[in-house]
Each structure stands twice: as structure tokens, then as C-alpha cells.
Length: 284
Image (cartoon, rainbow, N blue to C red; front, side):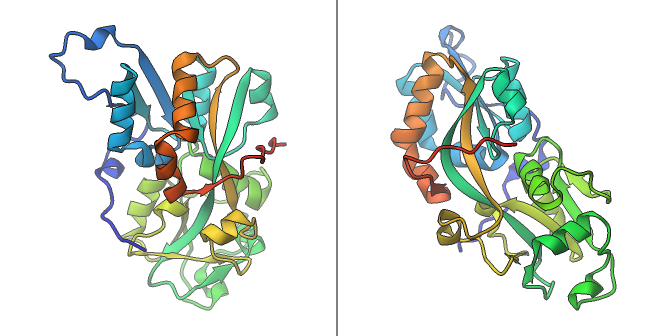
């Protein structure tokens, strides 16, 4: 896989970090007259949308497009509270969120990669072993045939949809019994692992290519486009677009552009497209 340097974003607070994409400078007097479309949610997806095509969409539709970080949880809340028009989510909506009038449209699939430092000799892990780590029943790497040193768990903060989906799969929404080190985003967790060879963390499969990381097999399966597509990788997550029931014309135009317009190639290159006939499963 291609290796790139960690983006400067990891050094900045991820929560609601605004990136205006209208392509206009502060001196443009017409900027205030343009409508604003606010898109919030998954940090990894925002990276995908930081592309000239997105700026082109804003110019062609004569609007100012703002992307906000903060994670899926923050994005969903922002749409519910009418602080954002569209959220990008890496987890399904909960029943109580649907009852508030939110709807989600399945776009693609991602995978939660379980990662360790490249110096770690481990190659695979099971869901049961992950559960025991988070219940503090497995405390050191000695259990996995390595050194007798504590497992340092690093997670993105509670705004991360990947974190929510991961813990739902591993501990079934029960409280975890450890105190993980928390970073502002999955990028923050990745960066923290550069200097911590005893760490275990999670990230999007789109972020798992950095040199200092090793992706573990989960239940003997590596996350690849093929195993994500056929569902054999056990930590597959949906990428969905979340809006209110009546999203408004600008949001509808954006969704159409993302799902069928020029942006679709960006998404298909980064994620595993969902079959057109497939619908998102309701979280229980």
C-alpha cells in the first residue's frame, strides 16, 4: 500500500474544525450572499472530501461548503440539532435517533482495523481476546507470546463512530473495565502509536497504511476490499449519509453528487461501495 505522511490535521483539535471550500477569499463581497451547506461527521471521510472536486461542486452550485470534523457522533448530533445539514456516519442510526426524524442512506462499507505497532510480533486476534482486553482479563502482551508488559489501549474519543461500532461488536455495549488513552480522532490515535510500541488501537481501513502500524487479522481474516464486500471480515461498518427527513434542496443536491456524481469515484477508491439494492441495517 502507498505510504504517506501523517496529515497536519492530527495536530489540530478535531472537534468542529471548519474548512471553507467555496474557493473565495475574505475580500469577496459576494461570499456573504451565498448559501452555506454544512457537512459534519467521520474524520476519515472528511479526508476523502478534501479534494478539488469538492471545491468544484461548491463553485458550480454557487454555495459555500463547510466540512466539520468531530466524528460520527458529533455529526449526527449536529444534524439533529440543526447545526449541520448532512452528517457522514460510520455507524447505523439508533432507533431513538430515527424517532427524532433522522434518516440514513447507505453509501459504502469501511472496516475497523485493529492495529498494533510494527515491532509487535502478533499477527492475529479474536473477538473474544479483544473482549478480554477491554474487560481487563488480559492485561499484558505475555498472553500473546510476547513480552510481559501492559497492553496500552489507545482509542479515539467518544465522538468517534468507529469507536462506538467497535465497542458494540466487542463488549456488546457493556461498560469497558479499562481506562484507555483517548485521542481526539483516529488520526490522533495513529500518531500516538508512533512512539508506543506496546499500544493497541483501531482506525478506519483507509488510515491503516502508515509504516509504523501492523494490521491484525481478526478471527483469522484480514480486512481487504474482498473480505469487506463479502462480509467475512467481522468488523465491517457502514458509511452512511445522515440527514433530517426533509433535508432541503442543497443537501439533496450534495447527496446526489456524492452518490452518483463525480465524487463517487473518490468514495469507490477509498471504500467498498454498497450494492444499490442493499439497505442499511437498523441498529438495535
